[in-house]
Length: 70
Image 1 (cartoon, rainbow, N blue to C red):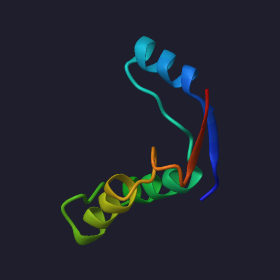
Image 2: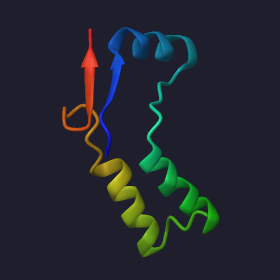
Image 3: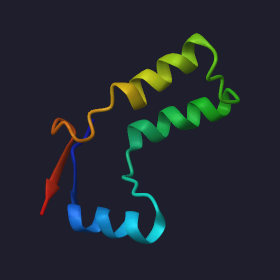
């Protein structure tokens, strides 16, 4: 996955103003599109694996996939 750089101040501003912060990630976006095309089968083996890979095993904040600028 490609590394994404963002300013921490921008994330904080977005959270304070909008209540959330998102980062575009084409790989995750492709997975979400695939889930949408399958009618979001979260209770299936595929859906559980999707959740594990994209949420539980996500590396945000672990310094592996994203870099932060202050």
